[in-house]
Image (tube, rainbow, N blue to C red; front, side):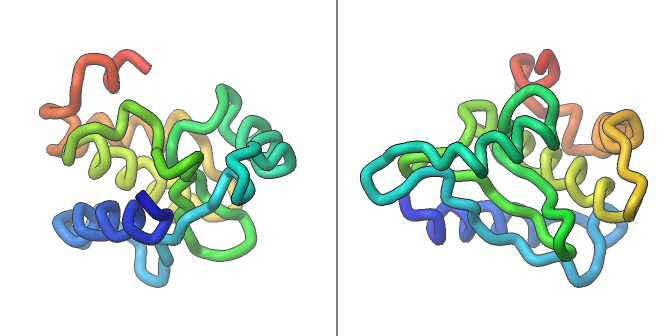
Length: 129
C-alpha cells in the first residue's frame, strides 16, 4: 500500500475515537522509512530508535509540530497494527504524548492507553509488547 493509503486507514480509525482521547490540531501523516528502491532511510530509523527506545513501533510523534507520523517501510506498517483496536489504542498512546507537551513520558502514555476502552480488545501480542 502507499503511505497515503495506510494513513487513510489510520485516519478512518482515528475518526472513531472519542474526542477526549484526542488532541486538537494534530495532523496524521506518513513517514516513509525507505527510498524508492526500498533501502531503509538510516537517519529516520536512527531517529525513531532514539525516540522510542526499542525500535519503530509503527507510529511516532514528531517534536517539530503537533503531528503523528505513521511509519511505512516498503508499503507496510508494523505487524502488530493488524486490528482496529490495536490501531486505535496506538493512537490513544500517541495522543497522550501530544497532550503531555514538552515532557512526554512512556509511563503516562501506557497508563492512558491501558485505561482506554480499545485496550480490552487489542490482541495478546499487542498487550505483550
